[in-house]
Image (tube, helix red, strand yellow):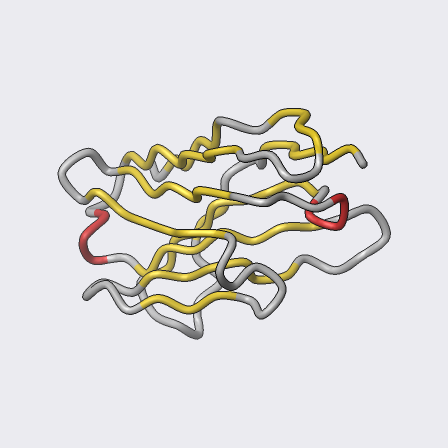
Length: 117
């Protein structure tokens, strides 16, 4: 059974940093496309960052140069380092794994990030 468990969310002031971590089990992480999404109240879920099997990375324009996604296939974890946080980064952040790009894949339950101004 595949499980993705996010951790590291919390309340932080604008300009601060947080590091989210996603612990995966029940799958071979090295074979998965891993991503972080977020959903703010009243908004659709949106892609924040994605890292492919071979390490290719893409970011949403809104987080480029502030967030860094990384994966450790030996520990089955995917992290999201979030720097210079802004109030508009406030959302529930979800970890996602998928074997093929057109699949919905698996989702964690999410972790709340709140950035105060």
